[in-house]
Length: 617
Image (tube, rainbow, N blue to C red; front, side):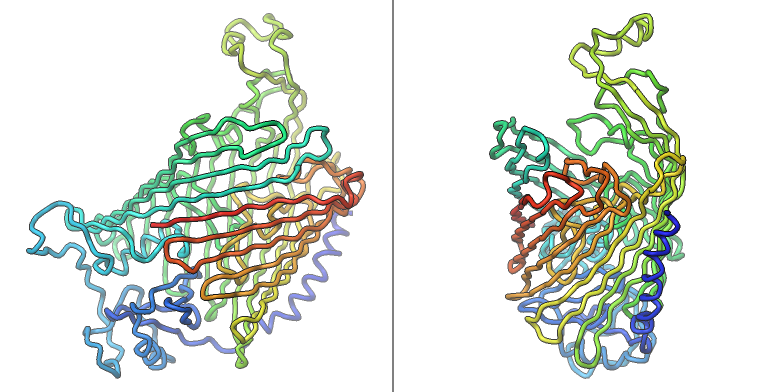
C-alpha cells in the first residue's frame, strides 16, 4: 500500500514538474545588477533593485533580502554601472571602483580591493582605547559581515548601528526589545478542562560584534525574557524571568586566501525556508564560498543549556551529535540548486523495560538517522514585469529508532530490593517518577515533497498569489518493524515569507504541524501597502496520508481518531508594518476547523492570535 501511495502522489508531481521545468530555466543567464554607494562601494544584487520610499531594497547574491537608505546610494551611478557591466565579468566580492569622485560617467570597470581603514589613527581623538564612531564611519563590509554571519534579518536591525572603535577596530552594539501578546485557543478541547489562555512575553536581546582583524570577528549575544499569564480558565500563573545564553562564536574568514572560513561556538544555523534547520547549536563550521558556489560542513551538539534557569540540556537533546552539510550552486541568474545532508547519532543511555527515571528526564525516542534533501528554487520576471517565483524541496530520511513508553510511578510503590538502595537514594521526595513500560526498535524509511509557486503582478499594489503543496509519507503498517513516516530533522521551524515583509509559519500558525504523515495544500494572497508593509491571507487544508491516532509535533493536543483522513482546514492573516527604522509591528490571526478525523470536534472553530512589537537599536 505504501508503494502504491508513493506512486499515486509522486507520479503526478513528476509529470507536472517535467511539464513546467522549461519555464523555470528558460532564457539565457542574465547579467548582474549593481548598486554604487555614495562612497563608491559596489554591491552586486540578485536581480533588480528597487526604491521604496526612503530606502533601496535589493536581494543579495546569497538570497537575503536587505535594504539601504536611499541617500547612501548613488542611483544614477548604479544604473550606469549596471548597464556597463552587462556582459562583462563581475567583480570579486568586496571590491570597489578606483577613485572616489562623483563625476559621471564612471571610469572604466577597473577594480581594486577595498581598503580596510577601520584601524586608521585619528589624531583628533588621541590614543584612547575606546572611541565612539558615527554610523557612516563603520566600513560597509564590516556591517555586511555582521548581518550575514549572525544570520540577522535585515528588517530586525536598523542601518544606523551604535559603534565604537576598540583598540583600532570596530565594535558594534545592537539589539532589540520584543513585546508579544498572545491568545491561544483551547488546544485540548476534548478534555473537560478549558485551557484557553492569554500570555505576555517580553524579550530583551543584546548583541556585540567585534571585528578583531580584517579576517577575524567575534560575536556575543544574550537574552533576558519575561513571561506572564494575562488570563486563563485555571487562573494566572506566576510570572517567569529567565536569562538565556545566545550566540557566542569566533569567525576566521578566507583562511590563507583559500575561500574557506571557520566558525566556532554557539551559532545560528538555518536554511532559507527553515525547512531543514533553524536554531542555535554549539558547532564547528567550515564554509567555502565562490561566486556561483557555496558549501559548508559542520559538527554540532548541544553542550550547554540555552535557558540558564532550567535543566542543563533537554533529555531529547542530550548526547546528540549531528554532522550537517549543505551546498548551493547558482546555475543561472536568480536560479539555485541546493543540497542538504544531516547525520544524527544519539549516544544517550537507552534504558531497559522496567527502569525507573525522573519524569522530566524521560526521552521517548533515541534514533540514529540520516537525512538527504534537494531544493530547486528561483525567480524571474518577464517583459511585462510579471513575477514568477518557485521552490521545490525533496527530502529522504533513513535510519533506526528505539521508541519508549512510560508509566507514572508512585515512589511508595518502588520495591527497594528491585531498585537498590543507592539508586533509590538518587530520587528526592518531590520528584515525579516514571517506569519504562515498553521499548520498541524499528527501521525508519520516509520521504517528503514541498512544492510552491508565487505569481506577482507588474503593478505595485496588486496581490501576489502563492500556491503550495506539501506531503510527508505515512506508515500504513505499524507492525512490520519499519516506520515509513517522514519526520523532519527536529531543528526546523517551518517559517518563511512569500512576498510580504515578515515571515510566518507557512504550515499554519495555529496547527503548526511537522510534515509527517501529512498532506497540506496552501493558497495565499499578499497585498503590499504604504512603503514597507503588507498583509497576507492564507488558507490551508490538512489530510493524513494514512489515518493515525497522532499528529507529530502539532500544537493541537487532541488526537485524531485513526480512522478518517480529513484533519480540517485553517485560515491565517499576517499583517506587518515596517514603516519605521527602529520599530516593527506584526499581527497574526488564526482560525482552524477540525475535520472528521477529530470526531465530535468536527465543524467546531478554534481561534488564536498574537500581536508583536519590536523595538530595534
